[in-house]
Image (tube, rainbow, N blue to C red; front, side, top):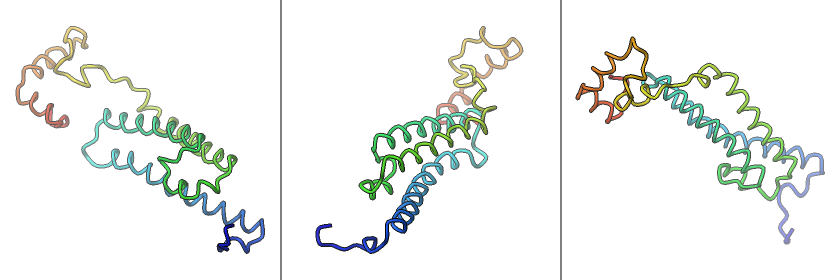
Length: 164
């Protein structure tokens, strides 16, 4: 290989493949754990709501699909550790990683099914533009009061939803 003898060139084929698989697994896992850290941060602390929780999970599931599609096309933008060794990756190695990402997506769907199945009404997303006549009768008066509360409107615009 261009007169350069690397540390793996003296290994037999079995040892080389084992070493390569260990490297591939560690590179892939480091990238995936870094990606998975984003929703973990979004789901921790006191400032998350059902709404923000569902957003974080749905966004991460969408990213997982993007990751497996790109990885399957040998596009490594989201996996910089794998990009470093992309020339050593075989298609069947990538298929294993794509399957892992797909399984993670299925696991998240199962684990968070209760949150993902909830439908948030429009008035919950933005109570200030909701049509009061379309809201449950027991909430209509409270919603009118909220919509006419200028302090609440200012807090909402500043992203202070939890203080409403």
